[in-house]
Length: 165
Length: 255
Image (cartoon, rainbow over all chains, first blue to last red; front, side):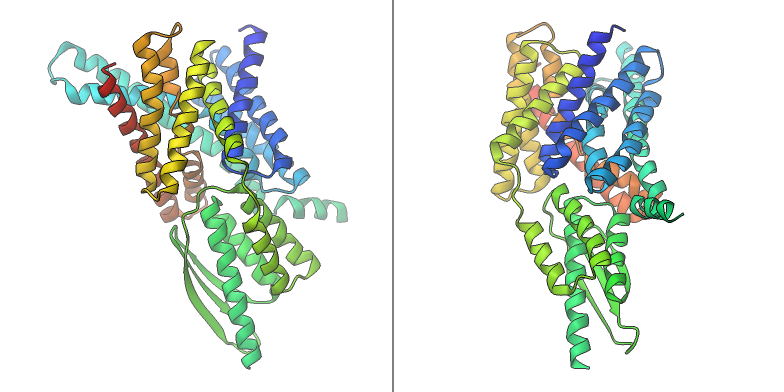
């Protein structure tokens, strides 16, 4: 995959994240970081996709990267990690797959069960729906797990205990 | 004794306020619990907390006298506001570190609630930009990006207006999805650009229920399964409302 189009996708992912950040009314000091996290996550996902990695796995890696980085950003900018991570992963939502699944379901509902096309549409719809579902799970897990791992000892406490030692 | 009683009462009201604000602004159940516990700890009270999606139940216990106050508060459906989540989280640390009293906390809460949102046209523009970014991510170029921008802008405007007119939130989302897909569907009808169906598919993506779905998963693996299910169903209904809007536009335009 050529570098320019990859960087372009990263940039667009950043802008999509920024739009959602403003919609969710995040503090102004976090906007630039959210753009960066969205871009890094998008870049990682599209880079892996270019290397023929499964789309759910690429989303998981991209989202986990965002999740981990947002814990660090949370400490630096004094805002909870979810303020950074949720807008940043939204560009990865499987909108296109969900859309195709919906179209497929509608087609299935409108046609008779023994027509030739039925099985083909059924297979495509199942495939798109499962992809959408697994990407969604991968994204939520990627964002949620770094937050849960660090929540028991919030980042602030981890750092102060390190300083005391 | 009267003094302790009023103090517990005030603490109770303040903690419920913090909890419901966090819940309606889009924090996960775990975060609501930690934050409320942290503030109560700092003020020297034991608490028991029941968190559901639409209401909070709290019991504040004074250890010395064994008095307690318990009450319920409804969570008002305000929509996601991360400025409040972030502000309350910061405040909770200052309560612990600088020993704030209830008056200081209440003042800070009032300040946070009064904080301005982004100006309306900036929000509309940013969301529309996100719409055309989605289109670019799925491979759209040139005129398709413009179509996605305009359709998303209009859809978001319709959503804000219908929320203002106090329509049911799901119905507002249906209206927004319908408006956005009618506009982008027209470009398919007119055959603008190379692949106008990309703009059609991406113009409703600004409505995706990202916060409910991610919070649903966070809640479930955190052990708050019931809250997670409720949030998941909420996200699912939003997805259905989007699909319905898209479908209506598709049938009306016959594409």
